[in-house]
Image (cartoon, chains in turn purple, brown, cyan, orange):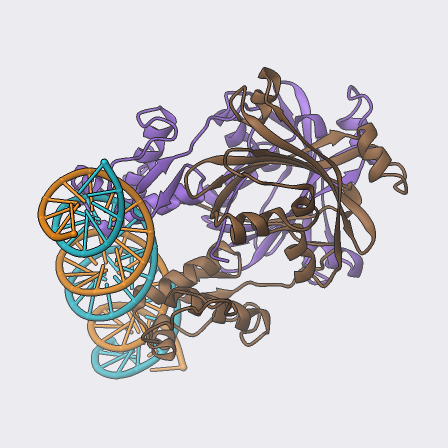
Length: 256
Length: 256
DNA sequence: GTCAACGACTTGTTTAAACAAATTTTGAAA
DNA sequence: TTTCAAAATTTGTTTAAACAAGTCGTTGAC
C-alpha cells in the first residue's frame, strides 16, 4: 500500500490516506463476518504484511475501530472482534451526517418540508442558549423531516448569516449541508451536542405527534456546529418523535 | 519529560504515560483559561520544547483534546481553543464512570438504595435485549440513585454471575464497580450504549416520579459493558428522571 | 508430574526523520 | 505603495526503530 491515487473531479469518494483505507477495509470485513464475533483479528505483524504498510499506520486504523466499539485490544493477546449488528428502528445517529444521508444509509426515503424561513437578530435571551453573541444576524428555519412519509423530526435551525450567506428556502428544502460544502466550500469540523427530554410543545403536537398516543415528551438534541475557521455557524434544536428515537454511543474507559 | 515514575501501592493516581500527562496538563490549562477561547494554542514546536517530548507524543495528546471537543486543528494555521464551559444541571455523562464518581465530580452527594437483589437464569426473551445467551446465570439488581436526597435514576442491572462472582446486596449498596476493580481486579474496557425515550412504568412512578408533574416519559440508557477479557459481563438499563437528564457528546466530522 | 525460567509472540509507548499540504510572512520587483 | 513569488511556519501522513509490558507455550530442573 504505497501510494494513494489523486482524487479526480466528480469522482466517487476515495479515502485520501492509507490508514483510512485500511480502517474502512477492516471495518467492512468485520461487518461482513470475515472475522467472527469474539475471535481475534490477525496480529499486527500479519496485517502489516497484508496491507504492506508500517506498524504505526496499521495501529492508527485499528485505534479508530476501538473508538467505534468494533474491536477491543488486549496487550499480549491480540485484537478481539466485539462487533454485533444492531437492530435498527428508524435510523442511527452518532456521526455528523444529514438526515438524507442517514436515511439513505438505512435504506429509507427522506423528505424535508420547510415550515418557516425567516431572518432576525439574536436577542439577549436567545444568545444564552444558542451561543451566538446578541445582535448577530441569523437565518431561522423550521423544517419537518419525513421518513417514508412519516414525520419524525422537527428541526429549529439557526445559521449565522455572515458565515452562511445566500441561504434560501429552496436550499433549505433540499440539503443545507450540501450547499455549505459544495457551493460555499465550507468544511464542517465538529459538533457539540446535548441530549435532553423535553415536554411536547404545540408545534410538536401539530406536526409530529398527531398519531402518537400517550407520549407527552420529545427527545431533543441541541447542537453547536463549528466549521474549519473555528466559527460556530449553526445552532440547531432537533426535536424527535420519542418512539422512533435511538442514539447509539460507545464509551471507551480511559485509564482510571 | 523523560520518564514517568512508577506508581506505588495506594498512591494517588498518576498518569502512566507521557502523552496522558501532557493531555491532562493542556486540558486543565484550557479549562482554567490559560488559553483564551478562540485563540490559538502554542505551535507544536513550541509545545514540544515546553514538554521536552517528541512530536508524535505531543500530537497524541492534542488529538485527544480534539475528540473531547476542546480544540480544533487547522492545517497550516494552528490549534484553536473552542472549549466553553457548560452549565451543568445535575451531572454529566460521557464517560464510563460510576454514579458516585459523577456526583462527586460535580460537587454533589450521592446515595444508592438497593430495591431488589436476586438471581435467575436468562430466558429467551431476556436474551434478546440483554445480549446474554439464554440460560446464563445472572444477578439482577434494582437500585435507586439519589442525588442530594432526590431520586434521579432507577437502574436495572444484570451481571453475568460467572464473570462477577460473590456479589452481595451490601456491595450493591456501595459501589459495584469498586468491587469489580479493587477486589476482583477486573478491567472495564468499553460500553456500548443506546439512548431512548420510554414511557413511564409503575416502578418509575412509584420511586422516581412522585413529585414530577406532567412528564410521562423517562430518558433510558441501555448499555452493554465489556471487560478486558472481551466478555460482556453487564447489561444495564438506566431510567433517568427526564427533567434532570443531560447527555453531552462531541461528534468529529470524519473525512466525507 | 510440577513448577519455574526462558523465549517467542502479542500489543503499548516513545523517539526520530522525511515528506506533503496549507497558511502566513518576508522581501524583492514593479 | 502594491503585487507577487519565494521562504518560513504550521499541521498531516508515513516509515523505521527501539524498548516496555503482558501472554502463552516450551523446556528443563527438580
